[in-house]
Length: 116
Image 1 (tube, one colour):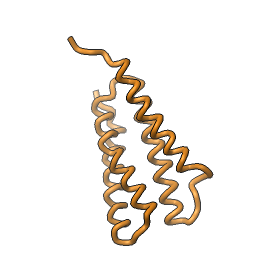
Image 2 (cartoon, rainbow, N blue to C red; image 1 turned 60 degrees about the horizontal axis):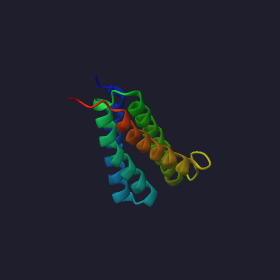
Image 3 (tube, one colour; image 1 turned 60 degrees about the vertical axis):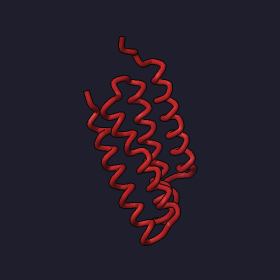
Image 4 (cartoon, rainbow, N blue to C red; image 1 turned 135 degrees about the vertical axis):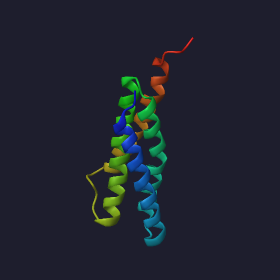
């Protein structure tokens, strides 16, 4: 069973990360480069979770990662291109959500059934 939404999110995250990396290289912008790195770093995780997450705890972790990377990267991009924040404390909130997402995924390992 796959969760096609997270596979889609992985593809979009990867594409956006590559496009933003190119923009940062040609136009400049440290916050754009940081957003690109976070999108690219999480794209493979979304793909893997889309294919492998059969437990609710892993799906919950995937949602935390997705919301976190969108809020974090969205805030950095808003600052760079619009000159304002997404909302107060958006980047730290997104970063915290990503950390929690990774911890939830790690905790999911303790609930996994072993074969054999």
